[in-house]
Length: 170
Image (cartoon, rainbow, N blue to C red; front, side):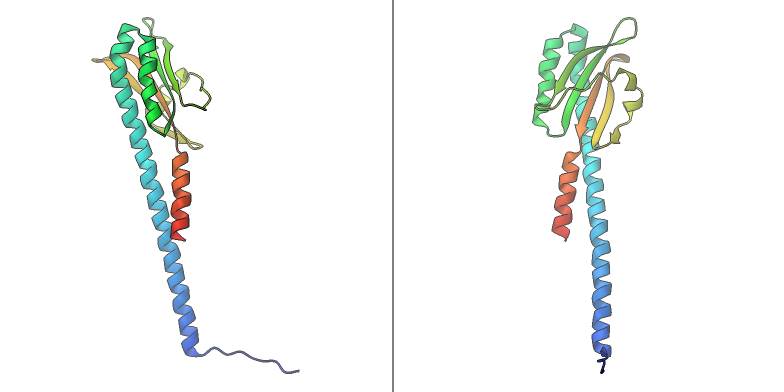
């Protein structure tokens, strides 16, 4: 039996090595690109959620002082224009210091979430867990805290963007 032995020329071997190194460099560069883009989009969602929470808390001050729940519920409906916010709650600080549920917003097709009284202190810094970003901001009248706004945002768009970027990169 004769066995054919295959030999690569030095030229062919050099081409394979160059192609391998170029492929590896392209994969590493693509991975870094995807990672940085996802980080930028995640940071943008954090910033947008914080800005929305601050705006809502500023707008809610007068309404809470007037104890007008209907107006505040109507004001929260503006969140329908943004795609990231799924739920928002406004809590009022009562005279005895306890919190009471004041108004809420739930995106169409989304289930309401329970009141987050017990997480007020924890959510002063935004928390991202399981595709959900949560943040709480105080509603102030001067230096006095008259309530809190809770905003729950979805990071589903990051997943869509990640898939899109990965497909484009490949």
